[in-house]
Length: 321
Image (cartoon, one colour):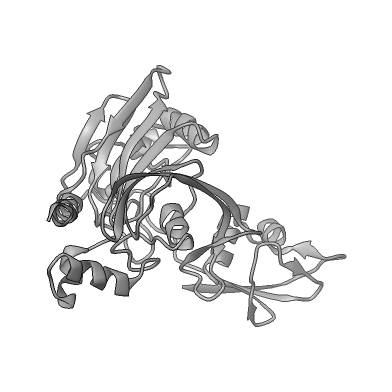
């Protein structure tokens, strides 16, 4: 990690993200990412927000990771391809697959799986860092993703997602009985106690909207169909935790004690919780969007994976018993 320092020279107070953008060669987005990851200090203290006001002679320290290779190596990783043409490909991403390389995780990702076979880095002069990734799923969330195969598709798809045009539906197994549909409207921001996590807030952060519909209701769990109207990091997981119905198996926002209770209800001992719930039970079931080249409306669905269906089968059997 590369540590750098600058002394602020300002006539009046200025936001730290705009000041660093103008004096470091970093983009404002890159500065905000550094701040979000607690890699910016002002006078020895971590900058809490991008809106922090810099004063004259403040000592700003920031820590950059070495740049990662924008042309990652191809890895032979099997993919479940739902559709592919010269402009896009649509996949059913498996749980456990990281979407994009990052410092400390330079291979074994979705990008490594598609580069050199389904996408060519030469086709991404504008968005070389994206290599087709226009939206993301968490590592342990499975389901439908669309990938751009060149800059033209990437640009249009990114615009669509920013405008919230695509319709995204998920299935989630959550703790507790959810007997009515509902909507969650909050802001989502970094957790002040753990900056690797996010939290729902009534004020401050990014607007986040989630709609949910009960599917099957079990003794102390519910299969929900969830529609996200915004695409915030960890949004469904944060929102379900916020309303006290955390996603089963979620190691970050979930409730391990309730995971154990569910495991025992299904007839297994507590030590089996990690086997029955190896990840958060969250699956991106369907995605509807307009084709970036033709404008044709397209919709793709991904069947529920085996681990998800296994839990549902057990819950249904207990309901019958």
